[in-house]
Image (cartoon, rainbow, N blue to C red; front, side, top):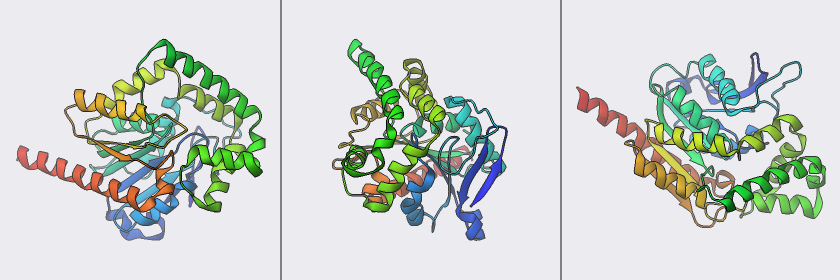
Length: 299
């Protein structure tokens, strides 16, 4: 548990190598959070992966234990990627090809930007529940209405603190029981996140121009990419992730795979941690083999 000061913020992060120096020799997994949530929700997954991987989580500007008072961070995809990139370089994760990047929801957009910036260090990218949609008048109207919903939810977010509305909030995120501890974390992080940062992130996540750039960037990632989706996701339509997978698979020369859970929602890392961890491990292993094979071919 450490803090890393930068021009943007005082960034809180956790690195499993701090408690176990032997983890410095392991492949690295950097987790990028979704909208208005701290890194605490990765803990059950980290616990399952940390025997084989060095796991690093962090709280983005405006969430959790990261502090932005006295700073003026750029609240854009590029700005959040700058923040994570500074951490990558601070920890030396850009030295050698040893890095897996996992992005969830909005974090998938930031993870994609990071994957391109650190392409020479990248072993794989994983995008969870962060899809794309065909541009039609219907989807444009839907994104416009979602933007309005973000404004309303931020204005009245304290109502999700307890009772039936909190339960409704959690049910929209998770189709299966995630336990009281993580229900409290998910709701509490949303309620207590910085209003300006959370609103800005919600808006750029649905901006048509940002989504077009995101699509192009996902195709450009030179390492294997895993698209993961819960088909019972009521937060972001799962069809978008399927479309992203099909688009990249058709246009990229690098491997693309799909991890689909029929009965899970927006939080597969909490809803079925064991199955999700197993899927990630297989992706990490196949990515390692991909680069090993490419190296052997060149020799």
